[in-house]
Image (cartoon, rainbow, N blue to C red; front, top):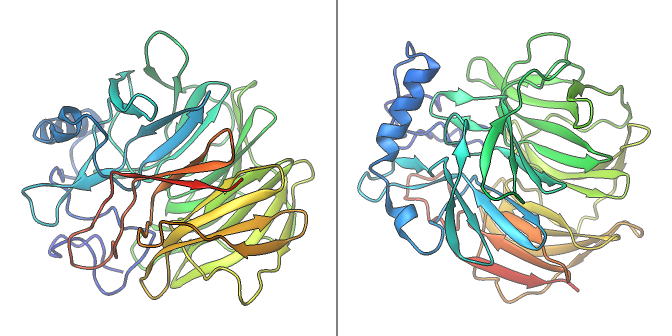
Length: 379
């Protein structure tokens, strides 16, 4: 795999992958011998030329961002966008900028978030946004941050001195939340060092690949751990989508090597037993970069994504947990395909889809990133 080569116009060749799309030619590519502090200064210098997002009244177009909901307010952070005057070069969105849906106004954040990123995993627990991993100008990270959302100001805090063995540096992973624990699954990144449980499969590019590792962050004890799982374990994957329903952590699809999957598994978060659920032939096609959003105690909403044939999808499906049944969901946004977007559930069963890319992100054409919202009502 040669996706890190600097002589490609947009960092992609015909060997496409969901594992490394953001290793493209960013405007601030730095020398490998720079230390981390120097890298941060370089990123900030380049970001200073990209003031469009903070000058707008609504968020800039983006993909690879995160979004969470707390008290019916949707918060959007990170990702990257097209550079306006640099051809196929992309720019990370400012690390200090977070947007709220209901006000459509930008809010600046403070604290020690060390760099802008895409492909991070974000989740809200009791009014706190937790941000793990991601990809920045020099590669993957396994740092984790917290951002309290209900205080008088928004200040990022890096979570240091956590006990236990942390996950490896990665992006495009998913997570579930249960009993004050965040449970991370899968992703694409560097090979794990140490005794990690699970499987790591190398990509053709040196040092990185897919995994099916599970890591638990206990927010009460501030400790990392790995469970011993049983059952039918999913293959390693990245750019999949996760959903928590009761004590089950569901995962659908994702990319593994040359395959974009349409398999469905759930992990019992009490017993740590994996179960594979059948997906009918007439069900959703294999995909990555999709969303899978719980909309009730018995239903999960699947939207969009990217197929093995490089098609960006706009289809929607409603999965019934109790019946293990898929039903296509008709909606009015069939002409608005999205991949690597976010989707958050509202209080009345509606789903807010924001951002993403509307065309083939891996082609040599300019990516068509979106800044609009799609509202899909599932109730």
